Length: 121
Image 1 (spheres, rainbow, N blue to C red):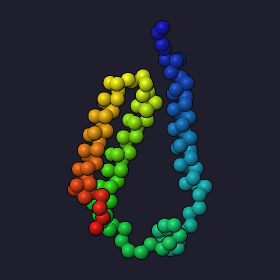
Image 2: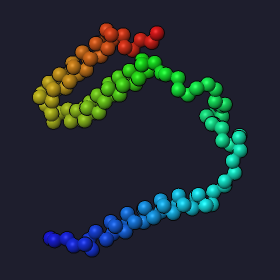
Image 3: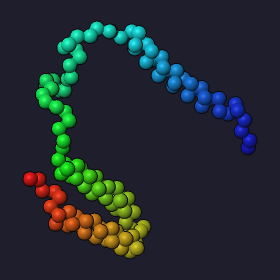
Image 4: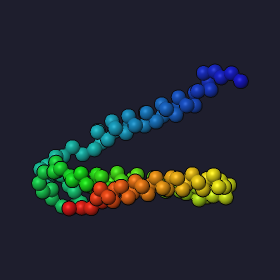
């Protein structure tokens, strides 16, 4: 079956409607929104507390390391869940592959424990 330009008309209409809505919303809010400015209104606001100090204080590398390791070991659940669902269908081959996968994860986990990556000073 051959397509012609009329087949794409609904897509272009939806794109035009979406872009038009965004443009009209931005322009409309600039015209209709309040334009009052004051010292109190222009101050930074964070959870009802006044801002104290500089926001550019460097974080410890340990914080980022723990976050990355959490993501790394959390991703294993993404592989474990489908394996557990299809356990019987995968048979012994699936079991061997999962044992290898879990062994590699355990080696990595013991490596991080040995390097004391999860200990805070």
